[in-house]
Image (cartoon, rainbow, N blue to C red; front, side):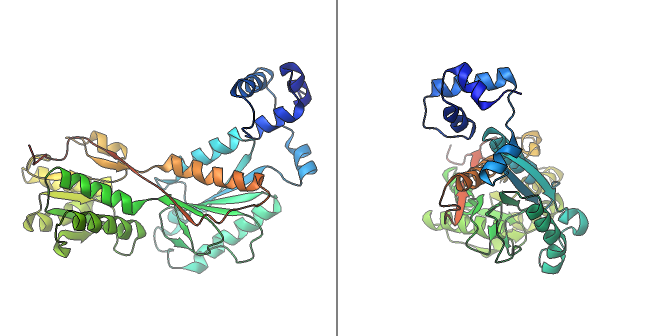
Length: 347
């Protein structure tokens, strides 16, 4: 079996240099790094994780706990976590709680249901001696699920930890709502309706804050009659459109692409042209946003970036003598994707 020493000998570098490169350290030249990585690929070198754990008292293994892999946001986050860990010499083990699959959305306020499923998984993570956990939430909310005395470092992705000792990586929903509203204002729209998710949802609340901030800066009076709430589904977008059109809005900011598709359904049924008679924007940048005609202007959620940032934070903490840093809540901005669903009223 090829060893680190053999890789070092072939590359004419020290074993410690090879080890540092494999562990993601950056204190060497890019030329040396590429030479070592190419030799690793040529030889098919695989690290001896058992020997490493015996020497370091670490397994170089991270646990990923997901609330449900079927949630649209989860898979890209998990893939990015796994990719980063793989690139930095860490294995991952995935533990899927399947909460949505079991109870849909009835478990959010039921801590006993969550603990009944989560606690055995936490015990399993301890028994197999993972070095840390990344908890991937199905949607952004405040999560109080880990015991105060849990002995491993934990990072929350796409959710906010109630316990401040655990850092969280989430999307910057307030900035996303602000950017989308500013975009509509820049196109000459001043009567901007909103279809949000549930009123008590953090995504809805923070995007609405951004919307209000943009209106204030644009000297546009906030009108609560222009704000409607749905349940993130296409039918909710269809249902709430009639009332907004009766209010005389010229543009509708939908807080996800599914509800935006429902607005398209209503306008098509009434013979209205999207991008001319009514302007529509969404949020998520799902595949449907590109398939709708005209294409839907929307905000792309940086799911891969959330996963990468979470893994980078965890690996950095494990490689550092200080451990997990007090980073609090890290917010990753969304990216506006412009298509053809908005009329430019300034032309």
